[in-house]
Structure formats: C-alpha cells, structure tokens
Image (tube, rainbow, N blue to C red; front, top):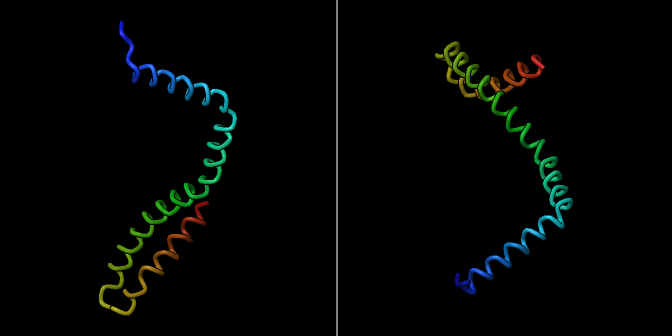
Length: 93
C-alpha cells in the first residue's frame, strides 16, 4: 500500500487535533457550560414570548370581533391585548 503525502498529513493533523481535544477537555466543557448558562435566559424569554404571542393573537381576534365599528379603539388593540396576555400569563403562573 502506497501512502501519499496528503494522506499522511491528514492523519498527523487528525491525531494532533484528537490529542488537543482530549488534553483540553475540561476547558472545553467549561466553555460550553458557560455559553449554555449565559444563553438560558434568552431561551426562557423566547419561550415566554412564544406562549404570550399565542394568547395575544387570540385576544386580538376577540377584541376585533367585539369592537368592529370603532376605529379609535382598534388602533390601540395591540397594546391592550399584549397587556391582557401578560396579565393572563402572570395569573396562571
């Protein structure tokens, strides 16, 4: 079997990378753990916003149905429905 230079170089680089990963495993897990802990509030916020948006869209449909004829009341529907959705969310918790 004839070994080419590229193949030998590929093997050497692969072994060096594997050794570097194994030698610095603790540092790598610490970095991943820090990134995870840092991003967790953003993930909670995104999940909460998703849930509140579902409730808010239901309130908007009901609000539009209840106040069809009044254009002034319909202009503030987003804010009122958001407030109602957050109140519902906090009451349930």
